[in-house]
Length: 495
Ligand code: NAD
Image 1 (cartoon, helix red, strand yellow):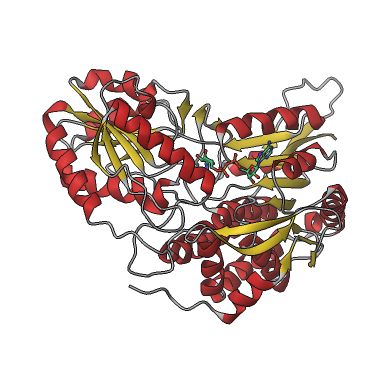
Image 2: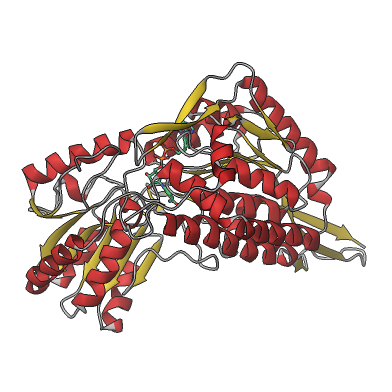
């Protein structure tokens, strides 16, 4: 087991002093504090970033506003698609550099960084690029009666809303950043990205590559900072829309700030406490493989990951035996080691939070596997499975956003809608059965933005994604994003 060698350009990038990227150039804010970026695999600082001050945020918004009206909104849809495709090509050409940077900041396995932060980002960019030439309104014949022989016609136009503020979490910082960048740019908006303070570097480099791809300066700006920086961005009257992905409490405060600023339109992609329901006829091997893969990938730090699993009482022993066996085979270690499957948690805060959940698991449930921290530097814990005792256990209700799945037996499938919907959140759920008819009857009863059958956490650019209830407002992907990034203007003509 050994770590891959870091590219020389990655070492040089880490050594540079970073700040924001505005109007096509790296900028060091004059008064913002300097914050260390910590490698979660070692708990050691690896780079330093100066956070944006008020002047930097104002400069970013002014730059994005001038790039919107002066250039990008008037660019032909075809040209917008061409630039997004070129950015996808450049990200792939710089795949290893971007993947190494992201793994160093987030603790994500190098395989995941290559496949998702770069590979899937390119897929999403190309999907959205295709939409640039296909966004269109409709023609309408008004119902007015003609009083003197005059006629009427009407049509609608989707016009870009303007400057978008994209606020991004640390778990898939590049890919989630790209979702916002691609949706904004394809509709003709300009965008300011505010990465998480834990993972501030890779999106800066992506913004530089976007200039190389032919994006005019100011169309994509990146400002680094914490929650105060994000709030200053939201409060700026030049921002027309906020697209936020992150936790539920922060999302609520973002929604309130956006309303208070200027009734600024806002979409919120928030957390989940995602249920999986294993029916009596479940294919246990398929379900266990699927849940172990999606529940523990990136150390469980995936918004749609299964965190509570309801298993028919007749299958629970078999399921738990196989889950325990699968977890015992997972290799834990440095995310830069290509033979490793499971790395550190992303931040010290995540580590402390998971220690609290492990304590709760010992008190409230029966640990099937895991529940311990690892005696080594960095934020390492074991992948953990717990048999819960009661449906109202906290373990089955609070988002852990970590590598802990709670299992609970049930007796009758009629109980499932009640169990699954007993949550303030409604991001995603999965149903595991060989009986499609039972799955189809259950799906309409489930309060979740996405329901998977015999699979879990599968995000495709063509399939809308977003939460019900406390998991958010709005949908990304498919054609659903168009209404969020454009104003629908009606035009009526008398002739
Ligand atoms: P977080 O809410 O702490 O931070 C998200 C972003 O908001 C960061 O950029 C942060 O700097 C910023 N922020 C922090 N305080 C703020 C404030 N007061 N006002 C405005 N912005 C503020 O979330 P996180 O810990 O980075 O990410 C984990 C959470 O994100 C989990 O709850 C997870 O479920 C959720 N998530 C949801 C999705 C989805 O698509 N639904 C995807 C990924 C992650």
